[in-house]
Amino acid sequence: MHSATVNFMTELTSATAGTSKVIRLRTLVFLVTSLGAFMGSLDLSIVNVAFPALERSFSGDTTAALAWVITAYSITYGSLLVIAGRTADRIGSRRVFNLGLGVFCLGSALCAAAPSVPFLIAGRVIQGSGAAAMLPASLSLLLAAYPHERRTQIVTLWGGIGALAVATGPTLGATLVTVGGWRWVFLVNLPVGALAYFMGRRVLSEGAVNAHHPAPDYLGAVLVSGSLASLVLAITQGPSWGWSSPGVIGTLVAAVLLGNFFLYRCRHHAEPVLDLSLFRARSFSVTNVATLFYSMGFFAMLLGNILFLTSVWHYKIIWAGLAVTPGPLVVASVAGPAGRLAARIGFRPVLLAGTSLFTLGLLMFALRVGAHPDYLAVWLPATIVLGFGIGLTFPVLGATAVSSLQASRYAVGSAVNQTARQVGGAIGIAILVVILGTAHSVVEALSNFRHLWLFSASMAAAAGITCCCLARGRQRIDNKGSTTNVTTPAHR
Image (cartoon, rainbow, N blue to C red; front, side, top):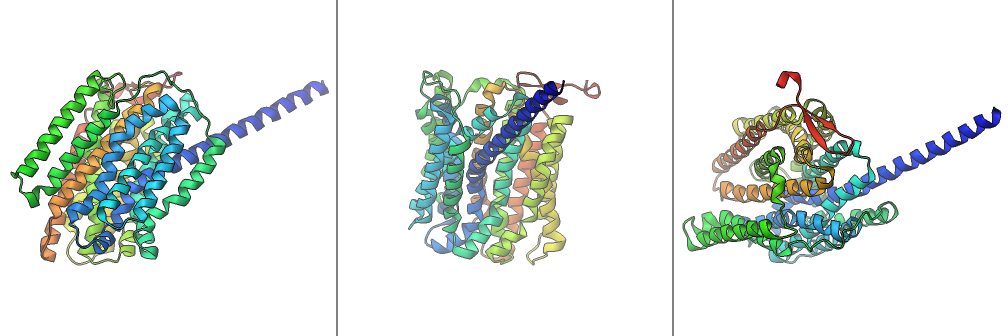
């Protein structure tokens, strides 16, 4: 009897130790993959706060030209996400993650050493390529480390890391620019990338590789990049070239032609950049349209708020960064509970609440902010409302996008949603350049910024209206890891 008890206790201790080891390994995998996602998402926003410093360093270049420092990254990042995910399936997620990490750090180093705006834009293109490789590969590695029943929660948390990175970029960027100049915004990626690489060598393992699958449509990635770049070029140069000028009309025609050729290849290529069959799922289609609208408003607001604080209220960069800090803090506190709430009551009510709060916050900026600084009474309340809206929306949009897909299609579905986010961001920044223009007085500048906030609010409202098309009900996760909507009696 005593011997049997000892054997039982030994087996129990061994099992407990094994379980603890698995939990630690999963935690480390989450940490490493989140570092990759955090860096890739961070560079979508951290450059925003460095924009005034870039304008001073490259005073001979126009705002439209400097805007490409932001949009070139978004376009490259968004265009290559899906194809990078397919490449990861073909040659291995761990290999693509490490390759993307190396390319991203190389691009960061080139940006830090850039002597001119074209050189800086080229570095941003390289950065975007690396980030595009890291993101889907990191999600694939993360999903492989966790059981099926925890995937919705993990995807939401992982999406929250990306949203937090975008939101905290201004604060971190302001500190770096103040301490060492705008080049530090790029240099900071190097030690973080090295940490992720050496940690990843210990905890990341290569999953299944489908080497015999057809090669992805790399030409399609070039076509969609060219189409988006042409569209953004037409929007940003419209005021200076003239909206009816041959240059603007020509770039718009190029955008349409390249876009149509891209869709043709998506319908006929064995491994297209964009799997159009994914859009047969209503929640997937609706969520990605909502993400596109929301991102147009979000990224325009993100850069616009920093520019307003530094140009109209004449804040120093460090104070501008600190002024927007409460928003990211709210995002960080709301993102996790928002995912759990969405799993319990359904995605739609959470997204409607998030888009409504985001719209309200932007309207508070447009209607209450004046030419004279009034941070505590005006700016801070609006920033907090925005933070709640962002925390309830961005991470939940990512989880909603894959909610109707089989677990095997999570990675590509998430990559398409991230693509919608980056495309929306690039278009939003291009529209910002047009709305803000060149103001010749404080009154004119304030009017332009109010128009920008109203534009962002209209995009947030459009996202909310789009989310009304989502099915009602909450989610249920089956034994295979796929998700289905459960209609509650009140919604029948």
